[in-house]
Length: 238
Ligand code: SAM
Image 1 (cartoon, rainbow, N blue to C red):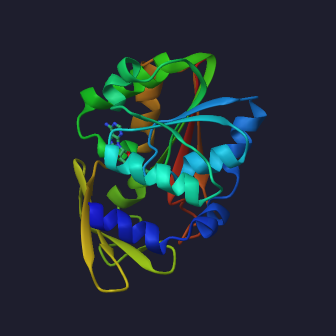
Image 2 (image 1 turned 120 degrees about the vertical axis):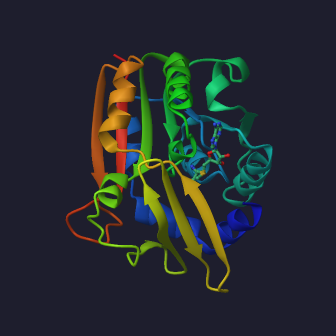
């Protein structure tokens, strides 16, 4: 995983990634008057740095200390920012992260890393509890419905992550989506993910208490015109 992360960060230019992601989630936060944000899936810091650059008071959490170290270094590289990092597992978030937030973001197809429903419910309940009464959760996911329902054809379908890296489904069933990532130096990495169905995630969000869940399709990087590659859920507490 470490090698994968380093290669990924080396090749995926942040400025280009910012441009390709657009301003969608930043605009959603601003429209709601959000000031204080908890990034629960900091990874190497891409979204945290973007939030800080846009003036949000940001706390950067991740379950991995190694990721947080990279994020901290990236914060300094991209704009000389000092990230406020906290190591915390989503399932025990309230134990390790203090305060309450106007918004929580869980982006970059991160929620897919939980493989049991119990953990997904626990994590969402922890997110819910850390939000202020009118807080909002923004969580994105790959469009697994299209993959599971065969709308992307067969395993020859490629997902493009920039010009340099290609991701191809290697194995897909209702319990596992394994992707093969191919880098320009011909090295390959396999990542296992849980194939979240869009309506399943929406239901879980409502079941833990979110009053309203809006789901958007991100057409920005769509390879096929009519199906988004990603969904973005915006869950409101009140
Ligand atoms: N948002 C960043 C981006 O898009 O570049 C990083 C996303 S990265 C795919 C997912 C991150 O979620 C990893 O850094 C991983 O350590 C973290 N993560 C996965 N499961 C977690 C859990 N249960 N608790 C806390 N962090 C977790």
